[in-house]
Image (cartoon, rainbow, N blue to C red; front, top):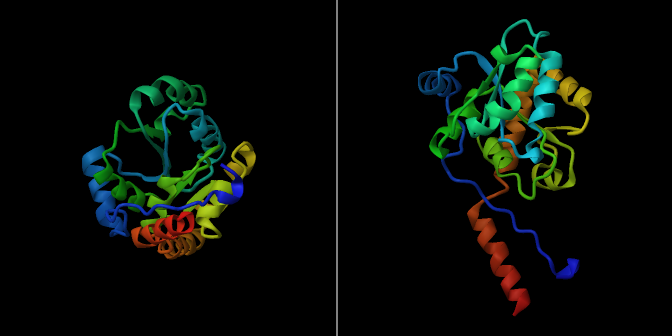
Length: 214
């Protein structure tokens, strides 16, 4: 199909993705997943596009520099993650700082987004970054990839990094985690920007597209 005839229509996320009381969300995570430390959140399995290897290496560069403990929680299928990335964590001597969850149901995801200190998602490719919009709808501070597909979705509501540059990823993650005020600003920006997306807007765009075709 010619490019001029294509129309991007963005989806909304489920209404369960919304701001929750952080302390209550952390209690749920502690009870259901035994995660009691403050943590940085990312998602993805062994899919290379999720960039988990570089995420772990970037985290390794800074995890000892914080005055308090910040774990790295990686959501995704444990079989994929343990096999491929568990060995990397052991090689870097940070296995005790990384938590690989098993499959997390959709109903539990909002608790993770609300309990974490930031969502670190420097993927190499995303046609439509649904996890990013889920996190934004929860008011989560976001660090993600400076690629056109994501910039088109999130605008200026997050911190952008080069997903191929581990040093750049580590520096931005470090700066964000050391600056609570910045995280609060990013949280407000995420929530405000997420309100641009709704199923009503999606249906209106689809209807307009059909009318143009007719």
